[in-house]
Image 1: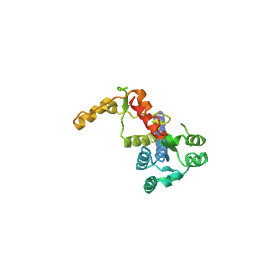
Image 2 (image 1 turned 90 degrees about the vertical axis):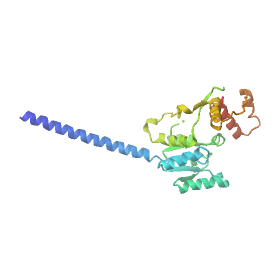
Image 3 (image 1 turned 135 degrees about the vertical axis):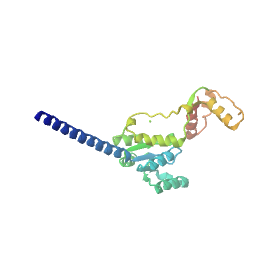
Image 4 (image 1 turned 90 degrees about the horizontal axis):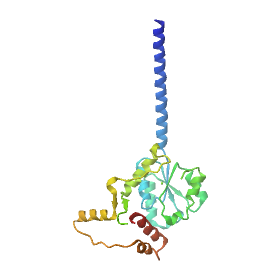
Length: 231
């Protein structure tokens, strides 16, 4: 009889310990999840083609969002209007120069995650990587296939990776199988949609690269992008 009572008491104690352990695990996970959900973003290049979509996705998913406001941007009315619209939606504007290391260090200290969408033109002058390292940050032929993505989807997935611990220190690739196409396949889809054949001409690799001669750096970057996408 005593042995039976002792066994029953032991089982009850074990059950209580397990329940408490599960409660602690659940609490820890909730805290960790909230920490991920509260991740603060600093978007550098937030007024650019991709950057504006990153800011939009970050705000829509409830992240505290900071956007770099370069001093010289005040001369561009359209850019200032965009920044003010971000502010109206809840973003914080951080005035700093991409070439001023100390300013960037102070800005990076405000956040958990830095997302850089600057063009190569500005990145050449940027001290952003050095600032992130200071704050303890970690450093994403005709038959050639490219992956075609909607820019808003790219922005949404970029922000979602921050909320998923599985992506920590990982490279995330966006490759929808139906969107992996050669240029020829893409043109065939266009022709099917519009119901007529398009006039096509070819250019060899050397001529394509030679087309960069005489262009300013920003235009050369654009040609370089198309070279890596299409050739």
